Length: 372
Image 1 (tube, rainbow, N blue to C red):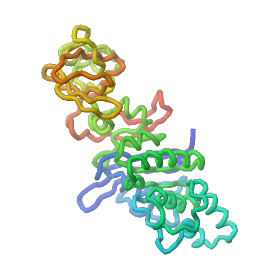
Image 2 (image 1 turned 135 degrees about the vertical axis):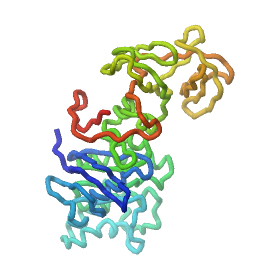
Image 3 (image 1 turned 180 degrees about the vertical axis):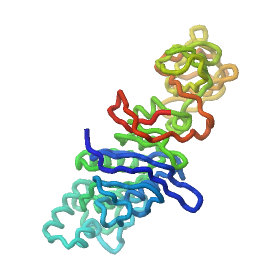
C-alpha cells in the first residue's frame, strides 16, 4: 500500500465566527488521484488552499511527507497549483511560460530546454513553444498551465476546478488527458470540482464534502452504489429515496410490501431510507410488476428516456431505453441488489456531519471509509 503523502490532522478553518472547515482528518496517498467533491461553499477549495499554503489553518496541522508545513509559505512546499483561470503570462510565449519557474531557480539552460520539451510533449503541445498564449484555444492554454506546474516536478499537483471554463466535448477529452498524465507521472493529484461526472470519471478516491465536513470517502463505484447518507445519494447522480422499515437482514418493507435486498446489520424494524437509482428500475407488463404505476411525463435524454411514474402516493424517476406513452400503465420491477438501505437521516436535505476517524474497511483496503 502506498505511503501517506499528505496528512490533514484536526483541521479547522474559521472566517470570523463561521467555520469553513470543521475538524477535518484526511490522508492522501503518494501517487493517488483524489477528488474533493461538493457544492459551492462546502469547503473543498479552502481545503485545497490549505494544502497549497495560500491559507493557514485556524487549528490543526498540514503534514506533507511527514513534515509539518502548516506555517510554511507556498513557494517552500513541493506543491504546485493549476487554477480555473490559468494565469498565463500574455507577454511570454508558450516555451517561456513553461520555463518561467525553472529560470527563477537558475537551472542550467540545457536542463531547462530538456524539461520544457518533455512537458510540452506530455501535454500534446510539441512544436507549440514559440506561439503566444493568446493564439491558443482554451484547452491548449489549460495544457500550458498544467505543463508550467508539472515542469517543477512537484510532489503534489493541486487542480482547482481547472475544466470549468471548457465546453463539454473538450472537458471530456481533458478528463482523459489528466488521468493519463497522472498515471504516467505517478505523482499525487488533488482535484477540486462540483461536477459529479468529472469526479467519477477520473478519481481513484472521492471525498464528498458538505458544509465544511466530510460526508463520505470511497472509490467512485462505492460512492455511487453505496451512498452513506441522503446528501451523498442526492448529490451523486439521481436517486429515488423512499421511507422504509428494515424488517430483518436482507428484507425491507417500503411502498406497502416486503422486498428482498442485500443489506444487513440494521436493527429489526428500524426506520430506514431506501435508495433506488433511476436506471435500476425496469418496466414490465403491469400484471408482472412488483407494483404498478402510471407514466406522468417523458423526457428524451439522448441515450435514454427519463420517466416520471406515479405509483399511488409515491413518484419515481425511471431511466430506460424502452419507451412508454404518457398516461400508460406500467409494471415496476426492482431486483434485490438495486435496493440500497441507509440509516435514517434527521435532516433529509442536508446530511448530518459524520466523524472522519479511521475505520477499518473489510473490502476496499482503505481505512478512510466513513460510516454513519
